[in-house]
Length: 238
Figure 1 (cartoon, rainbow, N blue to C red):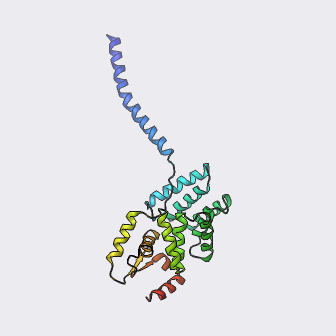
Figure 2: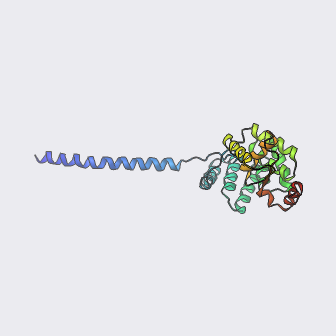
Figure 3: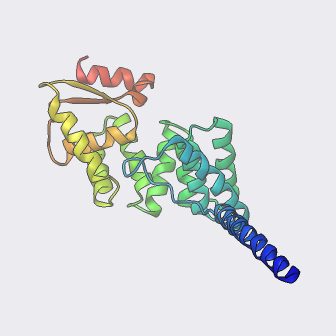
């Protein structure tokens, strides 16, 4: 009788332990899965835009990736994540230095160096070097299109945004949205845009598809550049 009672108590104890064990196992697997989180490729923002926190997370993941398996592509993803999460200029400069030392004279080193120098003539020349290595690279062409706009070179701007479109560098949903915005404004309107994700699709619609070419699309980021602002306002008569 006593042995039977002991066995019953033992069975009851095991019943309590089993759920706790399963919960602990699930937590262990979850933590293990999280610790093995892998970085994701950073896309141009004319293709897809993620949240600020997502870019910050990817910045850290690509930093870890560079420590274990450095590559020129990892450096570019690390830089793009830093750029899109609005990291300090000093962080961007450290990444530029890192890729230049580890992978000099590569598309990634030229692209990052150009991106880090704004709309200067030096940045433009670096971007052209990057494009020589891969004329269809969507990051290169998205920046180059803005440089051509900065230089008020309409012909080259049209060529590059067309290549960006042909290289699947713009999402259809974004194109549809920008089309609706263009079609909603009055004749001869001036449309101010912010970021390449809103500006380049507008350029593409106008340059390639000849939609609402009467509308003046002006990028606010470019407008901060004194030289461009003076030339653009003179060109548009504003």
